[in-house]
Length: 532
Image (cartoon, rainbow, N blue to C red; front, side, top):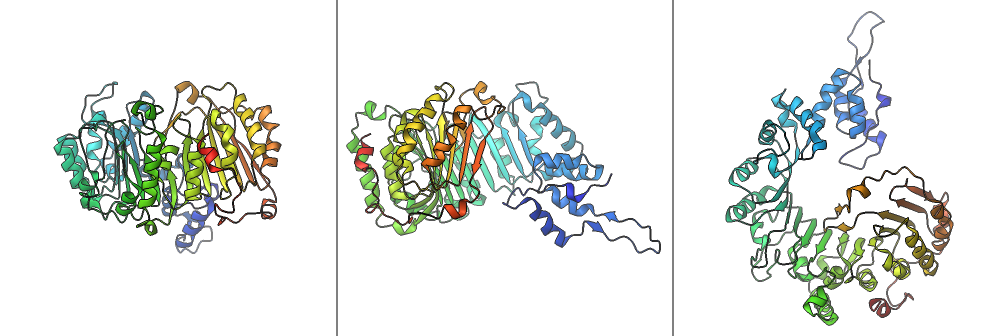
């Protein structure tokens, strides 16, 4: 049965292109209908040119790709290499069908190993004995992937062994490497990191085995890739130790790093970050020990100590402030960002308010320093009483509030906090507001959510928005006169979206200038918010 081109829904994977745009652009270069051979008969039927469909398959999402592959045998064969681009080998039992798919298509045609561009697997799939009943043939699969460009390897607190290091180094086309749950540092592992960093564009490491007695300077290990790495992440989640940046020893500069994720319990100043990574546009910063709820009590530290760190960080940026004029994304805990004291414009600020060490004044102080247009705030209900000062900030145009409801029954408490808080918002400039209620309870520095329990994560979004929320929607719109779009996403309910029909004309009235400074902004006093 011939495949109709109009039945395809084209969705770009790597670029934000509209559905029909990609197909129209390709139709200019190719012809969907191949020219029929020259014949004197007038009944010659046009022949479909499957080359154009093979190109279109690369831009389809998974659902449309599988639908197109069921149309005819030619498209089925053309879609197999597209499906094999991203291979995932996990130990979970629900991935048995995925294993069987890889076994059937890869071992049937070994040439298809060259189609795999991205591999996500765990340490046990490579070197250890199978633990859940899979045959040994699966352990031989990854070793045949010689055309990998991206490797995401979970080491399960194991170190990089000699055989594994040799295999990774043999991947000539590898440009992206992610090592999760890296084990104890060894000399061979250090040599591996140093030798492979020279040809990587993306290098991410997360570890929990670096103790306080080991002082590791990652910048020296990555010196060979100082001009090639575009995205760098080094996350250490333990409360003690972690990677360090030594200004006197580390003379390496990474001029091309666009995205930086740095999580360590060792102090790092803003001046050092700016001088070592001058081209950063997305910064994710974390300090596990500082973000403990009882950090100040355990170490008998007063608030003057953290305030002194903030003042020192702000003063140190006077010499290199020109290098960071603005950031696209700034993510981190509120107290960590407040202590870092960055002085630059930020387009999107992502922070949290759910620890005892966090204060609403920390968020406000960071907003005064960065003047963000978009705010992504994860908050618990007890901090909702201070939302009025945050939502009244004049530079905000888009706000997303994510509430954690594991201890709240039926979201009644969250709704009550919003009813008491939103009417007190002063001259809001928010155009887009998103209220989300989730069961997730922790967000890592890199932005990945860790679910609280499997039962909460398995709740299906089958119910509509509760009646008490539907009746409160007009009050939310009244609290934000310039609001153009409202999204309410409650766990277990279908998302609710409201858009203003004539929002463009109505939203232009009474808009405050974004360049308004702290002097002429008559908002809540900052000292009262810091003491809250």
